[in-house]
Image 1 (cartoon, rainbow, N blue to C red):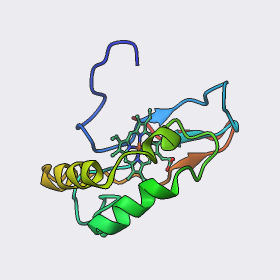
Image 2 (image 1 turned 45 degrees about the horizontal axis):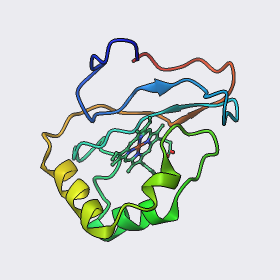
Image 3 (image 1 turned 180 degrees about the horizontal axis):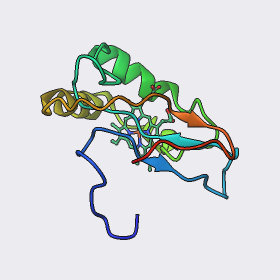
Length: 110
Ligand code: HEM
């Protein structure tokens, strides 16, 4: 957060985002692996329309740092471009066991 250095393979997830006091529900959220790894890639089984629909649907977790509100206004053409870009990445095997950690719960190492 302080240096801008990658903490792991780019786009492979695993970064634990601390609760944001402004919108916190007390939970910590871990970013998913967006690379197209067949076993551990979070969106490996999503087709392009599923990806677009997910962005239109917006926020699921109140305290997630991902700016779902703003991203719900990304247009379909741009979302297709992002989807195709993610699919073009080298697959990285990085299992993210879970996304939501409650207050005080031990976090995964990142
Ligand atoms: C264009 C940029 C981004 C793309 C394409 C993207 C994509 C995604 C996708 C596909 C998911 C899985 C959603 C689901 O399973 O329902 C996700 C979740 C998540 N993203 Fe992003 N993301 C982006 C930017 C960000 C940013 C800027 C942050 C934080 C600063 C972030 C943090 C998270 C977190 C913590 C989650 C898990 C909790 C949740 O589902 O809200 N993402 N992202």
